[in-house]
Image (cartoon, rainbow, N blue to C red; front, side, top):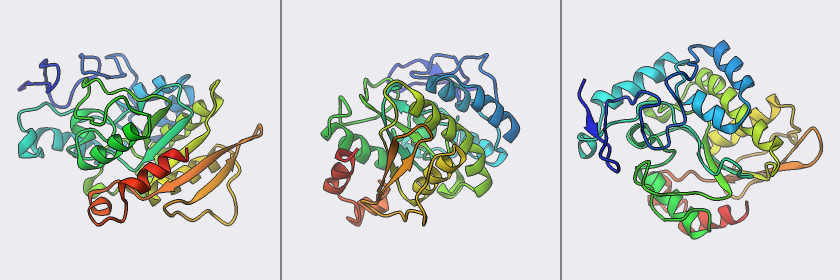
Amino acid sequence: MSLEPHPVTGAPFPSPVPPGTGWPGDPATPSTPVARDLAEVSRLAAAAEAVEDVDALSSVCRACPRLVQWREDVAVSGRRAAFADQPYWGRPGPSFGDPSASKLVLGLAPAANGTNRTGRMFAGDRSGDWLYAALHRTGYANQATSVAAGDGLVLSGIRIVASVRCAPPANRPTPAELATCGHWLDRDLALTAASPGGLDAVLALGGVAWNAALAAARRLGWAVPRPKPVFGHGAEAVLGLPGGGGVRLLGSYHVSPHNTSTKRLTEGMLDAALRRL
């Protein structure tokens, strides 16, 4: 098995990266339980006591065979030429940011040569360049760039999660994959809402993330307005919590290269969406 040096630390790693071998920010250990089917995802997610536990468990998940094969194939043979000399994470992307945050950014899924390479949500691709620059401008990030895990980036008051945590072929998870990974999202939302700081708001990047947030809210027994809130940039809905209070769900166009290059989403629009959280 060949080893390549990590772009920040210089330490050698195989691709995909085994859990607990020293990758910066790896939440798992060699003994972290591995979910191999829907039932095990449901059981392990329900038993997670903190968002850090969800990160660890989800980062070694192998419940969706199509996604496991794709992410690991990309890690070995599907690399972009610019990254051919780097190790690839090749595992599900854990959430990234402040574990005690009361605000979440919800994306669709990791990119094949972005999160699947770096192990950090949105790091190492053009979408991440846009998102982290905006988080820096709006005071949530200590720096404007996110190159790789271990580069010193820290988020405060906000955390980034994904509807699906493995890179999907053609960026399109199946309904079954969304439903399976939804158990990790459900637990993430439930634990955040029950934390001392609570959950104030979720910014959904794109329609898939918007729908995933609504589906998770329903599964958790939260009150979802009827008729179903329609996604759009600037859309807002309040999800009622069983014990009272609510979580604001905000919509933003996704930070995809298509949306940003065509000016469907501008820096000003993204900054304004983040400032509403």
